[in-house]
Length: 254
Image (tube, rainbow, N blue to C red; front, side):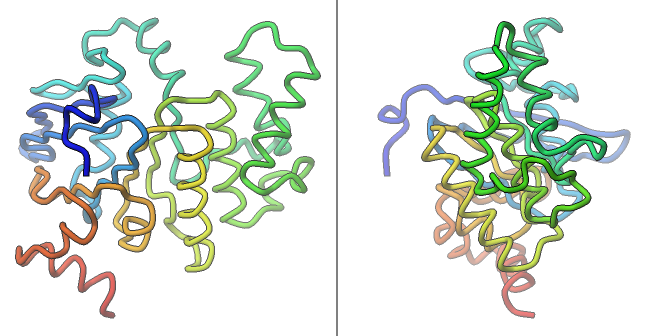
């Protein structure tokens, strides 16, 4: 495993991060560096602050204390234009895919491209839509609407719509939630393929241990508002920490 100097500067750097909602402490001193080309899984039970962390990274929530730097910029100090420019470099895969029901797959993919990239010809838009759709293995769905697709297909189209802007960073929020086991494996494989093909750096928010094991170069286990265990999947779950063991048992021994 590379040491930090060999990895270069982190793409995402989170230092001493705190966030509370009233009396509820959600993040309680979070530290994490994510390096170029890594898939880092943030693992934890529902309500442990995983999604709050993502929202702070993209500037949708403001932390109480601490810093978040993304691509060398401190997120909380950016003005709205600077924040919008940064967000164009970040792809966000929503838990519910967030497709427009009234649009075809083609139109769903064209929308962010036409909105964010000036001067493209119709031929260039067509080529990019077809290319990204092929990369998620769903070329045949181009004229369908979301209601005609399975949950796994909608998830893939949601990822395709994110990839069409060629982001440097991918943030996945519960990518396998609500999917059957076979489709979960397919989505996990797609996440790894995206990293290889598009050279993305990713944070994957999940409570699914199969997803964590399949996709994570490193795993960070969020407990009591802090990363109590960080390392490879095997390193994290070799821990004798009782809460880590019980989380593993809940997922794999039912």
